Length: 128
Image (cartoon, rainbow, N blue to C red; front, side, top):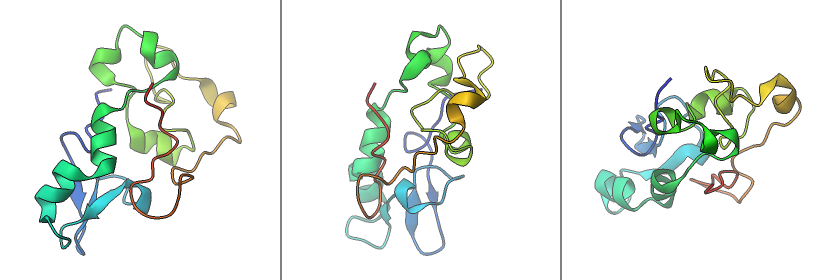
């Protein structure tokens, strides 16, 4: 378990130039822009609203009071995304028991792009 680096220290550029915050989630809501747009990669990395948001974002819930938060910062967003959890929830594999449990995840899939159409709409992330 370690800190998620999506949009902070890592990203992924696909073959057509889309820059995704997480190399494991190549979904439109995780795209910060395209290297072919004005500003290129540096512009996406430095000025993308999605990447700026991820650099400020803090996980909510029980993670905020956990002694290990400085180490893991809530875990992996990709795992949460693919298990149908809000990216604001604790990692489902939390070894400190801060997982909200399977009952909390059952039937509560929250798509990341509820805030509108297009790229970088992580409206389900709270700033904690």
